[in-house]
Length: 142
Image 1 (cartoon, rainbow, N blue to C red):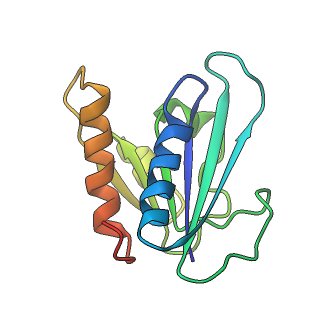
Image 2 (cartoon, one colour; image 1 turned 30 degrees about the horizontal axis):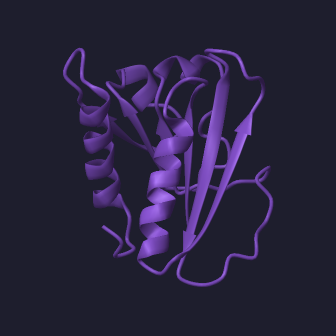
């Protein structure tokens, strides 16, 4: 099973991007679960969405004890607010735009920086994320 957790703020495409990955996996015949977790419906509030993808039935039902293989951070200010690496498996990957050296050195995880041009449109950001995920996921869904 592959578990991907998306971190962002309310108003960012956290859940839509997670759902897009889930739909793509589902169309390829994989089993999928998606859990959205949030604290408050207010602009800027931290939230995360977890996607589980497996080639066998997924019996795990809890969204509280996630152990992601990949964490995607849509807003780098969350590194100072939330432990985005909580539960991340050893050797796990954190994907975020323009990571600084201090963030990239924390926790002993692999960090993959998405290089986005200043003022990049949403479609450019999404395409960059798809490309990064395609290189990491072992399932043949891409």
